[in-house]
Image 1 (cartoon, rainbow, N blue to C red):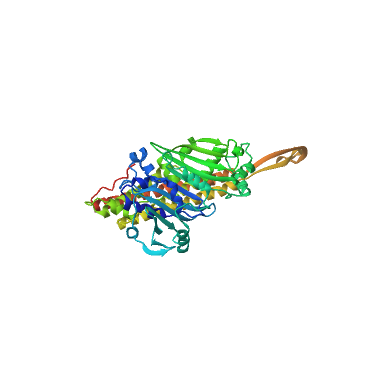
Image 2: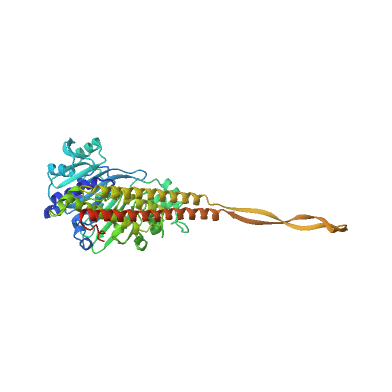
Length: 509
């Protein structure tokens, strides 16, 4: 997902006063502003998240709290929907973000706050912003943003939406949105109907480690997933976060047998979305569905939602929340430093059992840092943040290359059985004495015995050594890079503390 989310969510700070009547409106009503071709939607009951015990304990949304995932939502937003069209091979091609605000925000305030250039598209007043794409007021108290900033596509979107769900909008997504309530504040739903080709899936499943040693039929599993209707991730945010991933099919999932949990975990691992605590989750089977659920840590929730939710506190958030007696540049710089440092800490602490997850971890962290708000932030601090982001991307490239090299080596492992005939052997000839002493002569002979011997030859040892060496080189590079990151971070912290006369302390946990 791109940065269209920031523009809309940042507007919430203009409407930070609470309007109970508006806040009570269902999150699913915002589906009336998303394109008909949408197949992926995130629903967030922001008010419900903010009122949870874990949000209050963690002080989510406070000015100095680094902006990450659910704890980044500003006080002026009560409901949030992020919609897009997902292609398994190409990812998302566009993104529409719709936010329900606590009070209406006039166009003039919207455009001024985001620094956009006013324009008329699709019969509506819009603003093209450098960072957030096109933004517009869709209705009183409802703001929207579209990325990428394709003027023609924005026009088609604005002319088509009416505030009511489009007739052709996926029923699966509509049903998922209706599940948002006091006990489920977050839902991420993907309509997968007719998305996957069973023949292609069968090839991939033949290599699945989750199905090895099980009686599960790969062809039957491929047919089952070819008829998958959708996937839903739901979260209940209370004193802890409880989550469930549900796969809905057009038939009973009997083909999975006891492979449901290991197969789902393997898929999540390949996508770089597997959280450590999922190993302890419980799998359940329903007539036409399989679900995997359990407790999720805050870091796990951030990891799962990071492809959709980005740092959402924009320029207005910083300027509006800076106390009048403090230097806005100092406040913005401190928050930026803590935002980068928080993401660095999260990456450092995260376990990455595979190079796929490690690559996704670094790429996500780099994108997160790039999208942190920069209004009033010290230029030298921005250079440091950019350097960290670039370094994370380089670490991702190295990890991806190491993983690819190891996988290629694994594919080239081979074992060969060589069969040779056995022989009876002997020695014949004579013996005589000579001038220089005794000497002998003779010859060796061999006669086939009629039996054979089989020897196994493989290259496992050399390839295993090569794989270990590749892994060690990547790990050494990563350790040395982290040392460099720590050094430059300590230096910038000392400079900023001295420059602004405030302590650039570690972000709150």
